[in-house]
Image 1 (cartoon, rainbow, N blue to C red):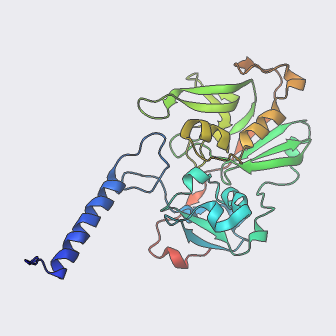
Image 2 (tube, rainbow, N blue to C red; image 1 turned 60 degrees about the vertical axis):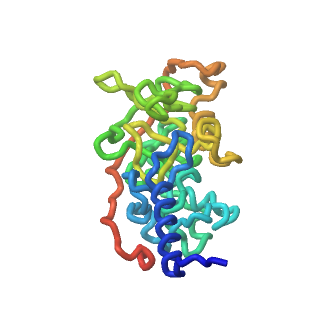
Image 3 (cartoon, one colour; image 1 turned 30 degrees about the vertical axis):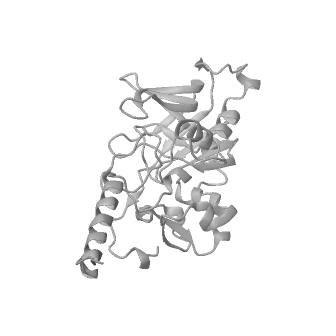
Length: 297
C-alpha cells in the first residue's frame, strides 16, 4: 500500500488556505436586495452603535455587546429584545453579526425609556402635535402638551438632513412609495408605508414620516423613518413575526378616519393636520475605538 507523502503541516496549510478563500468569498460578495444585512468591507455604515451619543443615555449604565454570528436580539434578551431595540434605535434586520450595540447593565433601566419630555409647553394649544428630536433620534406624539406615546426615529443623515421648523401634516398615503429611490438598482421603488407628508421644499421634494428600516443612526435622505416590521417582512422576507409596528400606530393616531374620512390607501390631501416640530442637531458620533470591550459611557 502506498501512503501519501503529504505531511500534516502541509495539510493544515491547505485547509487554512481553503478556509480563507471561503470566508473571503462570503464577506466580499455583494448582497442581494432581500439578503439580511451583514457587516462587510463593502458596507460603509457605522457598525458600532455605541459611538452614537444620545444625551438621554448619559444617566443609564450600559456596556458594548458585539453581535456574533449565532446571536440575535431574541436569543440574547428574550422578550426584553424590544426594549434593547428601541434603546439602540435599531430593528432586528440591522442587529446583524458584526454590529456592536448598547446593552444596559440593568434591563429595568430601559423598560420605561423615553427621552422626550412628558409635558411640552409648545404643544398645549394643539389636540395633536408631533415632536421630532434629531439629537435623540426620537419622535413623540402629544395631545394638548401631554406625551401620549413616543418611539425611535431615523432622520436625515449628514448632507441630507431633515429640515428644522414647524410644519403641518398636509397629506396621508398608506401605500406610498418613493418617487426617487429604489430598494436596489433594478428593484421596486422604496416602500414608504403609512406616510404622512409634512413639508414640500422649493424643489418640490416632499418630506414624509413613514415606515422604513431603522439601522440605529440617522440614515434617510430627509424623511423621518419609524419601525415597521410588517413592511420589512413583505419586502425583505424578514422578520417572520412582525412586532414593531410604530409607523402604523402613529398613522392611526395622527390621521384617523373619524377625522378625515375613509382611507382607501391612495394619496389624500388633508386640511388642518397635526402640527410637526423638527428640532435639534444630529447626534454626536465618537471616533472609532480600538478596545470596544472596555467602553462605557
